[in-house]
Image 1 (cartoon, rainbow, N blue to C red):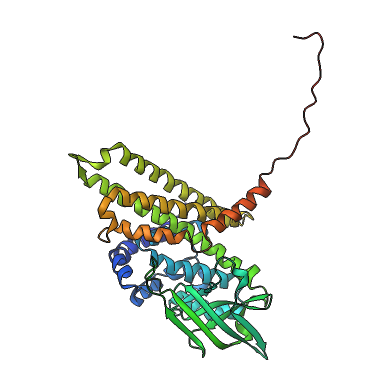
Image 2 (tube, rainbow, N blue to C red):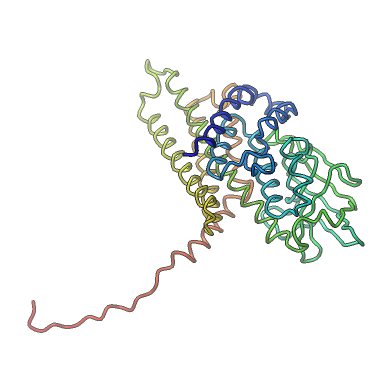
Length: 391
């Protein structure tokens, strides 16, 4: 155990209990994450918990960043989403592929919470097939001109800058685009099932002029390097988000079962309720173990860390959905109204099976890995020798 990193996680838990959890329902109902909360998180360096200390971050390694994400995610999914987008998708990608000049320009502002970043990949007709982005760019002198539309962009309606993925025929590239530039507009998306305080938006880019220096990574490397890096870090964060939802639903389920009486008994005494609780405990522990394994592998730079992360994301999001559904069941009719948190957790759990690569996409990725790794070598049939005089 790293005592200093554990201390950061413990302090984050206290912060979440005081500053986030009491307002989670309000955030969900209003569809707004207050700027005051973001500022408080920035003061604690919680918007850069995974950034190296030399850039002003807390320097959490992947394992403790996972624990940190779980603590924030248990308190509120939308606040956790801010960390996933700002710190993992955008921050980690800048740290990996940004030039020295780009890092010096953006990272200090991201740490201070003065510039919130968002990742603009999905489009109205492009989701899982990320290679087929229709937002287009063309070269013009010392600049690029970008036109197109992005959709379902978390924090897109309040972000100060975006990593925008665009294509020029078969070349996919990434660009750092600022909100204040001419031709950049956002429109909030209302009526969401969950992530209601994540400021999800449609982004429009109308002949936006982007200087050469704002190309992130090499031109043409937008998918192979930028997108894959961002989604890998995003999936790791979402895997821990699944653990957070499952753990929070489990605790709500157990607490309610110990208080609620039916037929003259507390309902935890009934075997079928115990069955759901037993399954929830086992599944949640299993999901956390898989996330821990992925975190350790990421920490060690293991080449299989990416596929382990996909497994963790797939399994933890599935577990979150199953445990949240059982938590609603244990609550009965109370679980179907917003007076109890399990209603919100159930909605939030479903989203985890969709974002950062759907469960079906993860299954395909994992299956391809399994087909390569676990093919048994064929052995020649054993030669049978006849033995006279025996038997």
